[in-house]
Length: 258
Image (cartoon, rainbow, N blue to C red):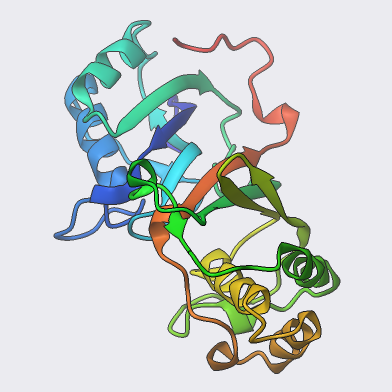
């Protein structure tokens, strides 16, 4: 961080349909790119934002954090002006000062994703959930989901071409629950691999259809072979819904800018 600059965390949400993921792209529209451009214009200088992670094209976020540095204190009305400037599918909820070395990605303790599934055709869920009209055994799917907590290496659910150094993830929660007309899969871990949640959901659906047994999921994980897992489900049903950080990341005397 440049000397005499202040580091800030930004909390935002976005509807991912029109974006090629979070990360700035050379030619394609991204959430990071839009935020950086809008912040830069409002603050009068280039702004580089570092996100808590990367979301794939079409994935949504109810909660996303990012950090950026500013050489000057931010104006009190920045969030109001920023939201007026941003497109309707991106919103900023808060911006607040943090410790100088705080990092949106590396300091995150856990992340939570939810996947939404509907079993009745619903025009209002077309862009927000995955429609599956086949009968599914969610009891067996939850049995298989529980096995995920017994493993650490999830290469079998990772995108084949990726530059990660390790496939180790600590999953602390994985469960399907019925919410009205929807079934929601919630999964929490310290980190996720590219395409991991969508591949896990696709594999659990194969269990629900009777094509795989819950025990088969153990075999797939141990194989470390992406080809043995289920197909990835569509991005439109996936939401980043939570990110946790250490309490000491905040400045003790800092006031959140609203």
